Length: 404
Figure 1: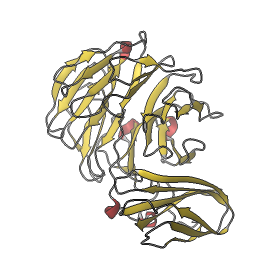
Figure 2 (figure 1 turned 120 degrees about the vertical axis):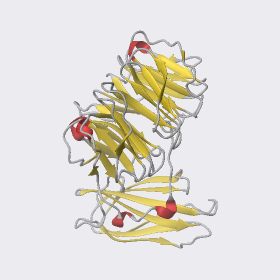
Figure 3 (figure 1 turned 60 degrees about the horizontal axis):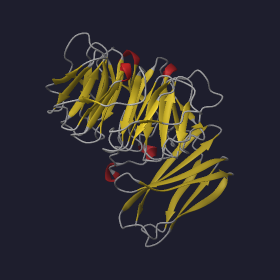
Figure 4 (figure 1 turned 90 degrees about the vertical axis):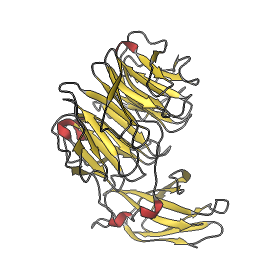
């Protein structure tokens, strides 16, 4: 499972009305089941899966080409720290490493079945799998050691580190481990509110994180010490993959080809059509709007709009959206006119993709509305203002650039 990595190119980001709407199927050049996906920027990524499949793109998925080797192994996870250095794990316990972008791979370790891998830097990484394995390296995988922990013979399905000290592991029998010292010691998080096998974990920062499993999705803002059920009343959905671009905005994927999106920290979820019915296994976003999901049958889906319906369609509720003043030397005001009633949310990102402001503005009736953006104390630069609007007909998004 991925650590935090969000690359954001404001200068290249088109307005959503001209972007490709929703999720679109890309030509993966494989029909094998893809288990995991990773992107290091908006162009370069890898997907791995059954029958030794490794496919790579260097143009955002317009074309995918094979880097496969071996014959029968199932690659279960992939993690790259840059365009050259990456690792994959295998269902037979393999850890392979590349230092040339996947052209050549060399084995680093071999043991029991491994299911996920996470590198916090090019030297510090962790891999987890069956029989409660936690493997750790501090030298880029030249050597791997086993870390001890309280889980007993559980299957550890997912691991994520946000830096070299703070990490989480999710597994069977409500196993949820965390460390604050790089795995020198692992503790079991309170799981009174968790009631299923945990399959995926994603923390945005040390406090805010999400876990999903074969029954629900849960959120925490207390370093995983307390959890809220975010999927109550929606049984039967296996959450296979989770990715958030900030504490509020994220996606989950799972069975039935379903992709669900939240813009308010999981308080509500909107299903985004994938056009597919088989299982989706993984999801990753390189920017707040550009993401990929992979799964059964070699499926690779891409969105350049955050999966949100194009605001240029016939049901577009926006009549106008403007920022004033722009450029601004102080605060700014986002003003819009809408033809429908709905819930509005506002997020602002800096040039590095960091969310600097978020507001769940609540319900707005049709007509004119405005929200103040407290930009007076912000550093000079270009900011992306993202207005999300949920109506009875769907979820819509409009983005504007603000110059401070």
